[in-house]
Image (cartoon, rainbow, N blue to C red; front, side):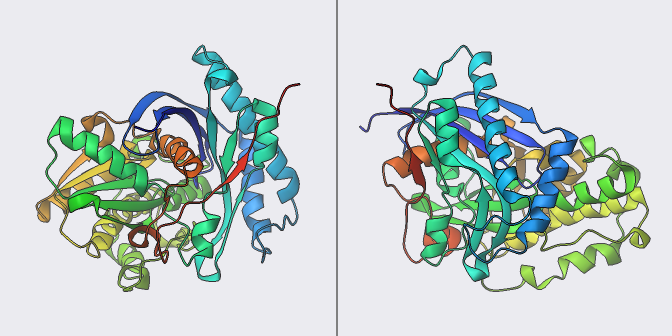
Amino acid sequence: MEQTSTAIGLMSGTSMDGIDVALLRTDGDTVVERGPAGGFAYDAGFRDRLKQGLVDATAMTQRDQRPGSLSKLENDLTLRHAEAVAAFLQQNGLSSADIDVIGFHGQTVLHRPDDALTVQIGDGPLLARQTGIDVVWDMRANDLENGGQGAPLIPAYHAALARGAADTHGLVAPVVFVNIGGISNVTFIGAGDTLVAFDSGPGNTLIDQWVEAHAGIPYDQGGMIASEGSILPALAERYLSNSFFTATKRRSLDRNDFAPPQGRDADLADGARTLAHVTAAAILKSAGHLPERPATYIVCGGGRLNPVIMGDLASLAKQDGAAVLAAEAVGLNGDSMEAEAWAYLAVRALRQLPLTYPGTTGVRQPVSGGKHAAKPRIG
């Protein structure tokens, strides 16, 4: 059996609300021992800087360009990640010597898979120097260079979790993991660990943008605003009739691929309610591209905390004879799963195991990836 490593995963997702940190002990394959996790929120001013970074990134045509605010933003983002690692270690009575590697996602500022271009800002060598821990970062690029979409990367970890959950919770197969972050994605685990995965549509990003623009708050906590509204069928259909859902080739999404409604399209509550329905219905529409009809959906990511989204998803899935479970119902942590995945993928990368597969990103053959920054050597 391969030796296990203690890894920390760092995730800053498309919602741009903060840094998720998780500890994992793993061999990057079958052994997965989940440890503590935590979250470190960005202040409002830094979130505004990240949003400006998305605007500045639209000028990029090469991955190493850093126009406008991006160079300074990359440096400051990396330092915030280093601070999050230090705080996490202190909270859990650990030191840098206890950690073998950090899996560092960085912040996606541009994702154009059709142009083989994806950009996650984050300085791996700087993070290694600041933390005194080896860092694996930039794990999407090699997939794109080999014909893939560069996303999703988490399916390899989902497969490992599904094996454990099937053993302990007797899940009815086929099992599909659904991650509802800014963008939603699905991972289908079939017989013999067959993996099929793709982005399924807008997740929280439309709702977040809608309530921020019209209520001045970053997200609809607990679906409270949506629960006061009604679904507007014409507005919902405008999203659900998008050619993304019928295209034979699955493609990965950027948060800008679906724009939020205009203010004249709905009032605050009806807009939030309709977008919550779109989030759920998009998952079921995209599931039609899977090789078999799912029997069990396991939901992670921030969207699982919105009972309006979960209610719609459960109702739509029931019509297809499937059950919907939050990650916690099968002993998993739906908040930290992406960060855990980045820890798992870092160990896989060090072992040169595949991170992506033809069935998950469209890559020509299974490929590994990532860059390795070694911690400073003393003496």
